[in-house]
Length: 372
Image (cartoon, rainbow, N blue to C red):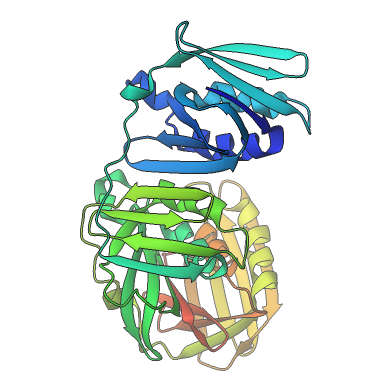
């Protein structure tokens, strides 16, 4: 194999591949990226056996072929090469080495046979549809903060993507929860997604997918089966196993009868929570909200480190209420608001609180209170 490729193009492809590779693994070939050159394209494939990413890049291919080389090492080399460099990759099968040349720089890297590289088995996808990158980005960006990190409740370690019924009809919905907070985000149901099985997309896959979604107008081809999900652009294909488990009935924890309505500037609220939480104890991170007519007082009282209080002008017309929350949870939920105002709906100091953006019900958040 012998190819010439622009440094910027190579860096983009290799950086996606090396982020999938697990740093610590017992199978040496899994630390490598599979490089395949044919026609006028070079493809880079990396896997951790649960996720596989395939990135295609244009190149001058002098000699077709394939090899595998350390993904992290190749990425580091390319990252440190000067901008605009033309990089030549030449594989010598006899010596088991890959030569990387750019200008006066020359590297000689150990390779492993391509035959040893595991390629994820292709799957029959029961549902295929297309969605704009902007739509998928909103669904996943607004829900991923609530993904659980508890390994024992593995079925919460991802985003549950499924078709659901809403007040506006059937929608494509993403839900994530860790038991303390929940995010439920809806988008118009794309054509072809009507019969899609509900799948739990793992956290790592959600983070890798985010790299495909920067171009708003890009169409992403989505394929779903009971065991796998695939997201593809013309250049990159991301395939992942889904979490084998049953996502809980989240509708039971979304309160429907909360009538105490608070409307507040989302950015000001997030900043105020951040300020008063500075003195909160690391363990509890508790902040108290005291609501009175058109007035909200945020306070923290941590015997070890001190106390803080801040008042905000808000729209609130119900009975006075005192309720406590984890400051980090409140901030993360307020940070999801794209519009100016966040609307909180309370019931009592011991019941879950609902938050949404103005009158928009396509993004709904729930946060559990805590004793303060």
